[in-house]
Length: 313
Image 1 (cartoon, rainbow, N blue to C red):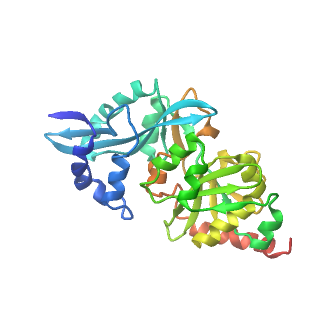
Image 2 (image 1 turned 135 degrees about the vertical axis):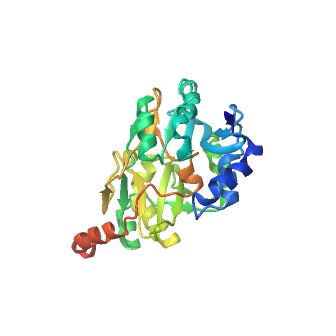
Image 3 (image 1 turned 180 degrees about the vertical axis):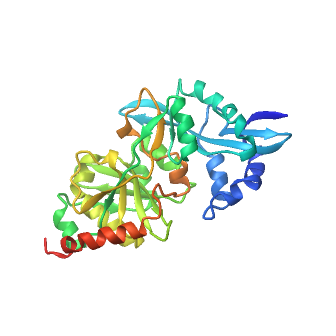
């Protein structure tokens, strides 16, 4: 008998042993448990749906529910992840989609890592493409960064100093993301501050820092070269990345747009694309990359850009 069951904590061992254990070699059991058993309040009372046949797992769809403050308004989000149906059960895939219709009436629904098959099905349900193109911020020297930055700022890394300085909405982001191995940075000048949330991604043998949340775009724009140089030096990474949709109005010295192999998905009538970030999603929780193996591509681009990167400013 085929049934659709809400995913709650008691179902996690079956999810892990049946599928998750082999889904991502860089994520262990506790990493996955944190994705399916998150600590903040969840009014839905579950974290997705599992499809079972005679108590055997044959499909699943993870969901991360969150309440966000967007442009001063409270908005509900649901991020889909780990959407999987066993091949011999694909004929019942629509069963997994039924809950999405009711959720879409109250939630902005996102999916940042869909495969082509899921992307095609989701579009029939009213999902649209959400650009996942990245802006790659190339390395620059500390002296150049200091000269390019337009504000003298202090960088604060210690959690016990960051949390008390945050507003209520950002303090909730900080607290909710504590179980996950992600980066928090507070930048302060004489007049304002900017809270930054990022991940240190180590995939495809190409480490980089991915900025997901920027609290104050004005201060960020003034000191972006120093932020970039500091993150690269602190984590010994190749570059810093941001979603291109978050870069409007920012002058990003020595950067390039990187082609997007595929788009993410969104279904929303209330939230603009530019206000959608990767917080409260598997991309942040598991420090996933939204890029393919780009090592060869970047080597080629670096060779093309070498004359510009080495010339004096």
